[in-house]
Each structure stands twice: as structure tokens, then as C-alpha cells.
Amino acid sequence: HLNVGGKIIFGDLDGDGINEAIAPVGYCSVSCGISVYVFKLYQGKIKLVEIPETSVGGAAKAINSLKISNSLVVVTESDFDGTRTNSYQVQFINGQFVITSK
Image 1 (spheres, one colour):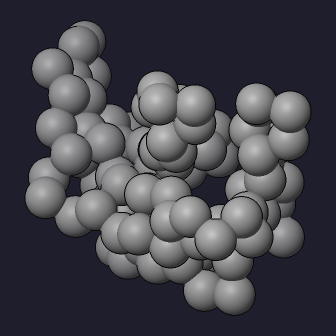
Image 2 (tube, helix red, strand yellow):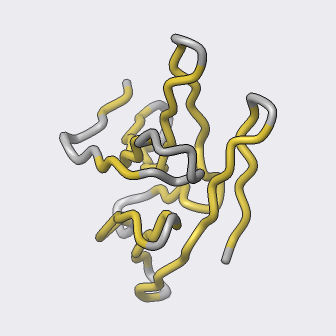
């Protein structure tokens, strides 16, 4: 079961003048969790990728805020260890996503 939760944010992440979308996606199987996904329209098809470091699971974990700032995905998340903010550069090169932590 996947759930976007209604929070979809648009912005140009890779400098091509076309907005990409980012969204927290919730999922449940044996346990529940949330990850941030990037969506891009490329050659008439939707490409998507999970930002792996954003995957949080369990009752005490949450993605508190999500935004695009200066072409970076900025994620604030919390768990038992506290709250932290991380930034990720998302590039689209030769039809593939390339994600780096900043």
C-alpha cells in the first residue's frame, strides 16, 4: 500500500527549465515507512526514483518538511535520535537520475 499523502512539491531540480515533482510516499507491508521520491516527465514517460537516505520507518519517525530550495531537495526528518535537515542534489544525466548528498 502506497500513499502520497497529498503533499506534492514542484520545482526545477536539474536546470532544464521543466519542473520535477517531489513527494513523500508512505508504504506499509510488515512495517510502515516513508521515503521521498522524485518524479520527472522524460520523453513522454514518468521516471521516478527514491532518495534512499530519506527512507524512515517506525512509529517515531517522520518527514517533517520537504521543499525545493536552490535546486536542492531539502528534507527535515525526525526519529528517536532527534530532528535533522539534509539536502540532496538531484541531476538527470543521459536518462538517469544521479543523487548526491550536500
